[in-house]
Amino acid sequence: MANITPQAHLRGGIAAQSADEILADHVDFVGGDKPAIFATVETILSGQNLPAMSVVGFNGDDKVVEADGATVKAVGVLPYAVDASDGDVGAEIWRGGNFKPEALVWNAGYADAAAKQKAFEGAPSPTQIVITPTRTFAV
Image 1 (cartoon, rainbow, N blue to C red):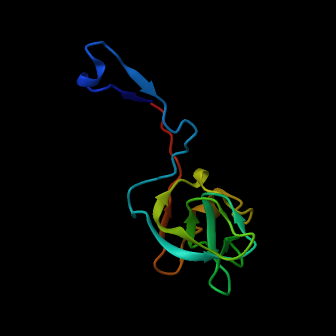
Image 2: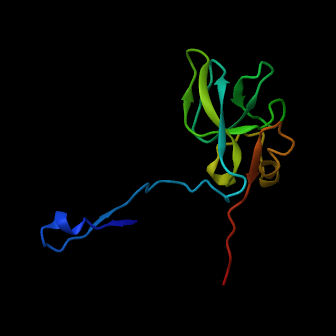
Image 3: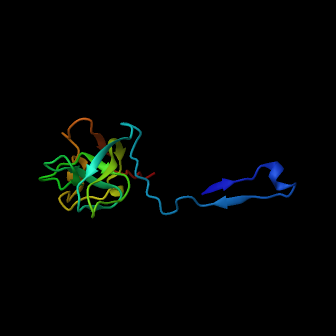
């Protein structure tokens, strides 16, 4: 929760405090700071309706589709939902970053944690994506 205190000259001498909850339903998707997040602009294949944070790859025509771990290997993450139902659409995909697997939208082909952990291994350049599971510690 963020606490916001108005500047003194705007309070007119009256004690005040304001609180606001920012991104209450936000899922923390970053697993670490290396490699840095970077994006490329690619073409989403017509007919695709992909949710935000989808794991994506390229089809045989170098257009972006959902990665399935078999015929379409993972090369990036779609940071926002894209509806290409009516035709090809240009969109950014993250080709670099360190992400938590639970924050991403995976195809059923990535059935377990091990498959998700290795999803981006061997991806073509410039992809530099690392999957870092959330760790809990007992004290």
